[in-house]
Length: 170
Image (cartoon, rainbow, N blue to C red):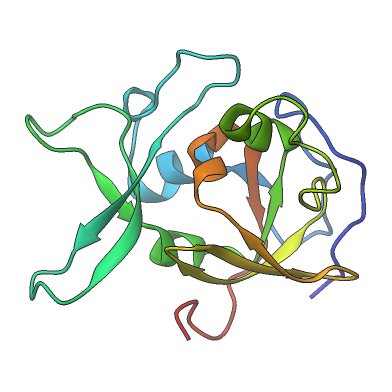
C-alpha cells in the first residue's frame, strides 16, 4: 500500500489528485453510497452550501443486543423509515479516507477546519468504526479519531483504495 499523501487541503468541488493505476479512482462518500448501496440522489439532502448531506444514525440488530452506527438517508424514503447502510460494512470496501475541511466547518462552525483540529487533505488508512468515531491512521500523524458528525457532509469525504485484509471491527 502506498504511503498517504501529505497534500494541502482541497475543496469538495475539486477532486483529489489521481492515484497509481490499479488502486481505483477516489470517490466521495455520496458517490460510493450511490454506486455500492444503490442509493439515489433523492437519499441526500441538498439544502446548504456543500450538498450532498446524509444523516448519521444507528441500527439495532434483530436480536436486540447490538447497535451499530449507520449512514441514514436524509429523507424518509420507506414511508415511515429511512434507508440505512452500516458504516463498518460500507467503509470496509475502501482502504483510505480523506477529509475536506468544509466537513468540520459545517458541523462545528467557521475556523474549525484547520490543521490544528484534524489532518485535512491527507489520505488516512481506515482502521475501524465505533460510536465515538472512525479510527484512522496516517504517517506522520499516527492514530487519528474522526468524529461521526463530519461524515454527514458526504460531498466532503473522499474514499479510495483496496479494502483492508482484516475486518474493520477487529
